[in-house]
Image 1 (cartoon, rainbow, N blue to C red):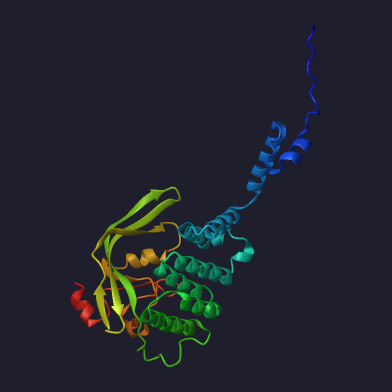
Image 2: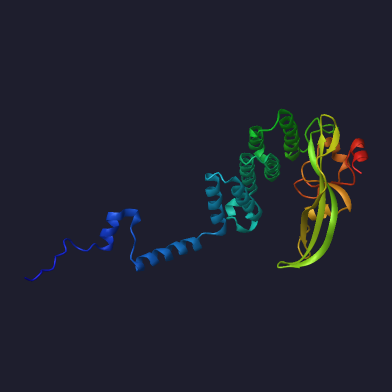
Length: 292
């Protein structure tokens, strides 16, 4: 007795039929799969570095990866002049980036960075003073610290306004708490980098804080070796931070606004934003006796 072959029932599914059955999990035949890869690679190549960084920022923020989001926002701030579309190179757009950086820093618990970002936002576009004040009030600062910062930003907002210095503060008696660093140069040299010759200044630092309630300075920690390095291209424009760090061999360095009560004790500002100052000694009798 002969055995008859079993007949296959149905028909072979085509690629389109298979995809209809399996939906998103459909596996395309090799030619189609490679075609999609080429399309995706081409789409990525068409997006700019700026757009990719904006997408990375949005993704990290959505995932609550605030440290990575802060790094993305800082990249956008530092590279806006070269990478941003023309519409995003205005002072208002820069201020918005700083406001967003302040929000990210607050969520990450980095309050010093948040306050610093708000200062830069106000300097970038004084018209954002209202938004800066609102963002400042949302920071989880102590009541005393918040009041000090409110006074600082109120004075700076008025000083940056077209009318000039704030009325009632011409006597220079307004004070608020602030922090500075004592600087000690370790190395100052010229090196060859990929971008060309660079001047480098490496320094040690020790943190100090002025307390407005007691009008006294206090060291907040020991000396930190190799605390930072400032760079300036030999053939490029002068860099404010490098110039300030190398102004004296032993000095105090401030990179935030100085209260009017101490304005006579600091040299600067070295930058257009009015936030980089140096001094040979802290502007206080008590501080000058305890600093050396």
